[in-house]
Image (cartoon, rainbow, N blue to C red; front, top):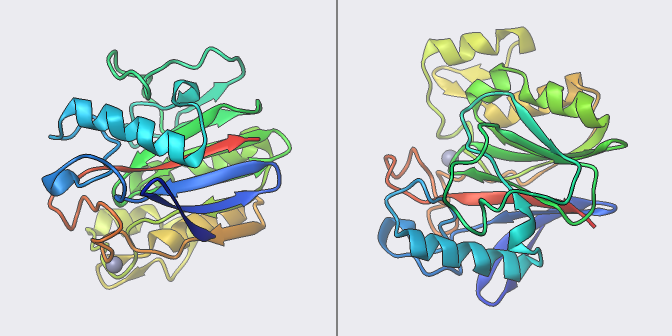
Length: 245
Ligand SMILES: [Zn+2]
């Protein structure tokens, strides 16, 4: 994974042969205060006009048509949307009517951007014979099996894990660690939960054997990333965006 920058927009890029995977930072937008500056989430206290402008700035910088970016209303579940046509709903470029309630976007067609919004949860991209996926992975969606479902749908063989809250900062209640007991020991240390390890084990269990990870904690990186927990809910959203070339 490497850092990239264009027109002031800064992002991390990983990827697969034949697909691009980008993780935006908070750098390069027009929002102010706690949303400074590249906030891509409309369901925040930020100015909607600023978010719309940020979405176009981010898409232009990384090189995807904002009208061809699919996103969902994320509900911490394991439901997936599979895009096989070119009629991607324009919720990203023109927010208005709420999008479908799903936490994973998938496609097997080139040029369709798959986007999830995050601010501590992990954006995870999967790639396989059957296409590409971008998943919103918080503890509830992981416990509900979103990785296994998406991996099976596209016969995934590789994955890229973006920035999210690390075991240094993710203090949880016992119900969270209980949910991951089937994955074996080592997920929890005291009250701290290691979500990246949950993701790695879920990927391995799903047969994904090539895994690249940013290894970055959003809560520890206030200059680069929004963090819901660190900023006590008043914060913006960065994105994971992937597409088949
Ligand atoms: Zn941390």
